[in-house]
Length: 323
Image 1 (cartoon, one colour):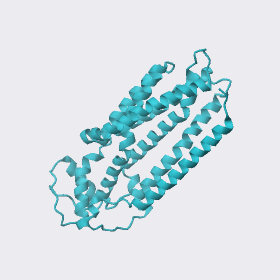
Image 2 (cartoon, rainbow, N blue to C red):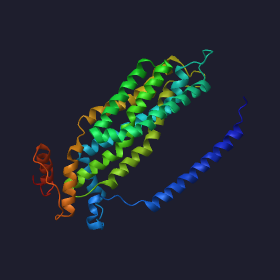
Image 3 (cartoon, rainbow, N blue to C red):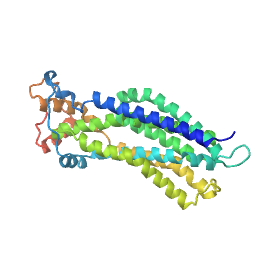
Image 4 (spheres, rainbow, N blue to C red):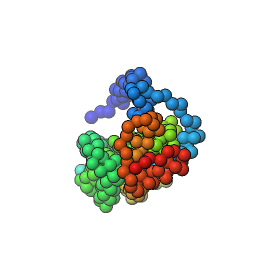
């Protein structure tokens, strides 16, 4: 087969132009049909109660003293970084670890195996969309993410133990992809719970500051992961003639499999302490009462969670909820 570089470039250019047009149309539609986020409780009597946004400095002060917010942001950082390191190192891993039928390590054969990994890995990610929400409804969002992270670490350990066995690497990849689905689909819902808790304690949300940090994480991880990958390749003196040198074969499993596995291990450690959802019912009651003191709400039961919640409310000068 003769490779036609000019034809390939022309087809790629058409694809990119179509993608750009679709993106612009999507952005315009989102702008026209999306409203700024407000809480449901803001619609007292069917009428929205407008409130001025708090200064960024005030929002930042609340966020940086909120352990739940810090946990979520570190979680987002680890989730994105691990995934991006896996993505940028995938081809290098496949071409360094698996020879073709002739025993040669080639970019072409590595690319073929990489494509298989990407396709097979997308299947559990799509199926996980059907599992993540029901699982979160049953055990909670944070626990669902924790369980998924444990599964991802198990998959990662399998891959690290057998990095040169393609069937086992493929199985490892599928297990990690399935374990990542709760984090992928529930991360913003969990962040919204943190917003609710902040509003219940402080009287305002921190969407503006938080989404600035979130956007920075989303935008910056590709560059950071690529930089890490390039630093490793440079240190190992990677070139087209030594794609499978002993040093590269030793390093690639830790980049492709180990990096994400380490990130999920950090997530597990943090989410052992992520229990913001215990306050969700009290948060909603407090927000509703703060916005409408005459609203009828179901009285909370007296327990340790209510005592702790009222202690936090009291520190911020807010009225306590009565049992």
